[in-house]
Length: 150
Length: 150
Image 1: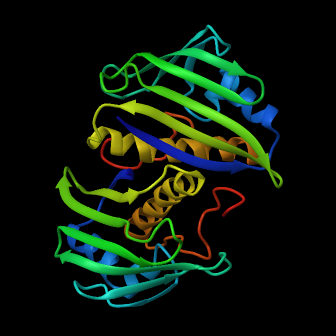
Image 2: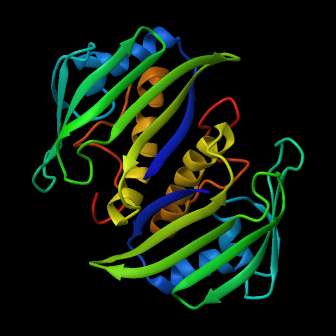
């Protein structure tokens, strides 16, 4: 098992970050505009990415959503390498920042796609930071291109 | 042992990427302007980051520099968590892109600093991409801020 790990700090409240992780409007502002479902505990979120190869997105079961501290998703549909993996968001406050400790755990293999997703997660975290600090994120399909895989 | 892994694609030649990884001018264009030393195999590169806490940078021993395919560094001085870790760059060509498979291997613990470095590496890889595609990277001290740790 291998994990993707990141840490970012955003100059806003934990509540604002939590809202961006648990509401459709928030998620659509930094990850993908094509998102629907329910971001509260027990809900399922459906993320789709225009133009991506099939399956062109992920369904996340929301295992935990503890305001405004922690969110945990399990991937229940999507690319085979993602299914059964877990995405967690742990929020704390340091200085004037909300710190996000991000983990996408449970990859079977550190393959090309995992390397790609590690870099893409970083750019989406920077999109989340931009959304909350400037009002404008870069969600798909306007996300930052990192390679030929977009 | 845990690893930081990334994949980026840059619309330029493997030779141009290799040069940006092995020459002082290249490295100063995307990672930190305060770099000196010798980027060829057997050399040592000294990277420093203005304003960072002591030790404010890293010394990398260049274990491999195989034009224009692979570069491997070993960290021989710097923050304790970095010493003895290895940074590798494997270059291939796909479509119109030079693909970089990046790895920073050998971390003892997946701690806060490793999470931070994972995100920072992604932003520096995007700086390298920008340098080679647009002529302008974002090396320290003008690097993208990801958190209170900069």
